[in-house]
Image 1 (cartoon, rainbow, N blue to C red):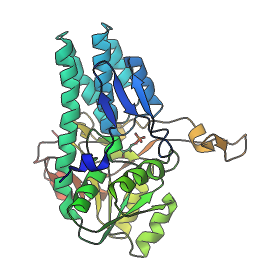
Image 2 (cartoon, rainbow, N blue to C red):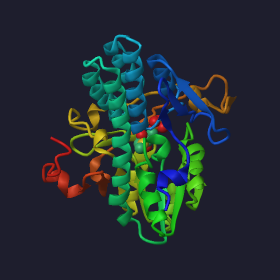
Image 3 (cartoon, protein in one colour):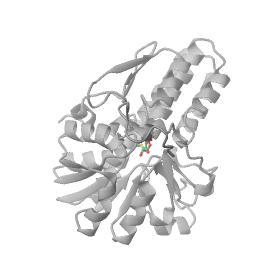
Length: 338
Ligand code: MRU
């Protein structure tokens, strides 16, 4: 039996001896193009322009960026700063760069590349475990709604939210996924629909604004999303629109699950108020595929993420434990938070 990764049959990131190869997510689903990053600066640019995106995946890319800087004899402290600042919201990015900074002190190229590979392998393992821990929440015949892309394209493995869906699907359960298109960057329409199609998971694309009426009609059994940063009280950042979905799910009494590895938990962050939300170019809102969709003088506001309160989350599904609402009140028995 092939593994889920083998069935998906693509590599989001791949270290090729002297460079990092990335699938260029800006070109999907139309074209399967690859980007070669040979310097830390090229990795910074790939992250900023969203050629690579998704919290764990940008962490792994940044780890290889640190390796490229160290091998080239560049100031890895400087590279660390540039990589960390390339996108501010995902906790995994700084987590991976900090892990690499420690090993860069060895000035041993083999060790440094080995650490980046270990970060990638650890993420793949965490995804598999999240899938195994979460698949039991999905009954045969279920309708799941997901937002953005928390799949293989967003990680070094099978994905977090989608990892759960793949694990349930390949165990023989009939799963149907409602895919939010995820305006403005369309990660749902372009990436999640592409991935689910490759895996043979039945899915239906919807405009983000359709979720409310689908829930009211009883056509959504649960929501599963990923996360970019989780604060100590359970507040979490994820793709803009996630907060609205969490409120809707609570109103309709529908389970709302957040799937994330321990590298997304930020012990320095007390509440959601401490999370920096990235604001992106308004052009992502005013244009689609280069075509302007509003008057030339209209302004746009483009926050990439929102913060949802932990109280709206039924369970956080991690590679270690399932954390329920009561667990946060009990003071972090699982050790994921201080
Ligand atoms: O702006 P993006 O595409 O990087 O945003 C990605 C998300 O919000 C994902 O849900 C999150 O990073 C989790 S990915 C496993």
